[in-house]
Amino acid sequence: MATAMGLRDLLYTPSRFVPDMDWYVSEYARRSEDARAMLPWVEHAYGPDPAERLLFFPAAGSAAPLQVFVHGGYWQESSKEDSCFAAPDFVSRGAAFAALGYGLAPAYRLDEIVAMVRRGLLWIHRNARALGVDPGRVFLSGSSAGAHLVAMFLEDGRPGPGTRIRDVVRGATLLSGLYDLEPLRRTYIGAAIGLTPAESARNSPIGRPHRELPPLVVARGGAETEAFADQQERYVRSLERTGTAVTDLVVGGRDHFDLALGLGDPSGPLGRATLDLMRLP
Image 1 (tube, rainbow, N blue to C red):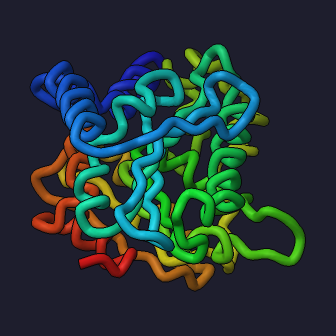
Image 2 (tube, helix red, strand yellow):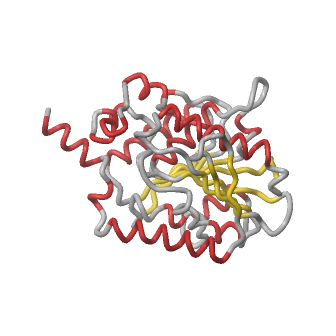
């Protein structure tokens, strides 16, 4: 049992498989700081909690498409301030960009974090025109735990009866995601956030796909562990059974952390897939 637990922990610890984790942390921060220095941006509150904030980078024109990025960090780390790195790629192509923040575990339960992200994304939907955004061209992306939070919104993000998730989101890009939390519950991560069996079941999007989803890009790096490969493979199969249009992408030479740096870069397969989804040049 101890051996199995240790292996599971290892396979869900992507930082153990990269040469210099500190480099990635500093690179996210550096690129995000550069984005805030070169582009106009504003911070918006989307809810009453101090953690419910987003950074918004407007497009030059009105009725623009929008890319919203939700950061990872196993629901415990990172921030909206360090998640602006892709803003220049999208703004330079006529789109707006937003980095969505949320409260971190263990101060917040996973149910609360999922609810926060839902509030934030619905706030964007309701305020799209005031932001200069076309409400029919809102796209989402998230990495790791952020991909999980976006996937949860896709399953339960309708603003009310009679609406479809496709009325709120036109497409999404999910990177290195966590879609079945039960294996994670039995690791040090589950222990750190106090993940219960009931929370795991409620917050595992792999068990909840429906037939109203917009087109999705589901991607991981070729250098990721078999645990993340298995998460993606099983989630993509569940989406395909519902008839969802899904691009299943494995990006060679990329790992769990540098994959997201190519989100809006047209020179790489992930950037091309995301920009194509948005119909941007």
